[in-house]
Length: 238
Image (cartoon, rainbow, N blue to C red; front, side, top):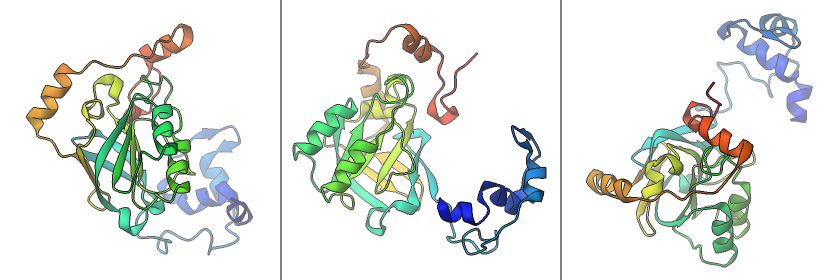
């Protein structure tokens, strides 16, 4: 962040992107005015569009029968060995359950940790799942264990951590139908995320599933009733 600031900061980023942006008001003025007045002082930090650091962006959207509306992974922080991964599901209905299992030594290489009911409605609020990913990395499993959740991640996430799975479990998304020992297949180059069960089996499980309801009241209950899916921005419907 210091390097970015020294190179001109966000105004300099806008300067690089100015020909691809639409104008709009901000609290500091019009975006294109800010972009035009900015200078890029270090073109090794803020490179032109025809000389990027990587051929692809840092974020990838995965889709498949486990995430029909998409899921998010920070592909630039995934090791080569985890870009394609097959593992057996270890399923938890809360972050705490998953953390207890990880610290208790119940997660081993080749596992795909599934944490559900942490989405916008299920949590409610879509909390950050940084602690489980940090524990997995800290225990030396970052290159051999995947984590899949309908919760969210921040910029600190690394490894095979896939979040924002949509639809979420609370909305009877497919993640709600995953069972322990189901095989999960991740293919980041192909942008896919699948659980290896048939379409009929998926429908049967979802038809018979009982959604886990975390009891909330007041503002949280109202939030749950109004919030949109994470694939739509987890915003509140009017």
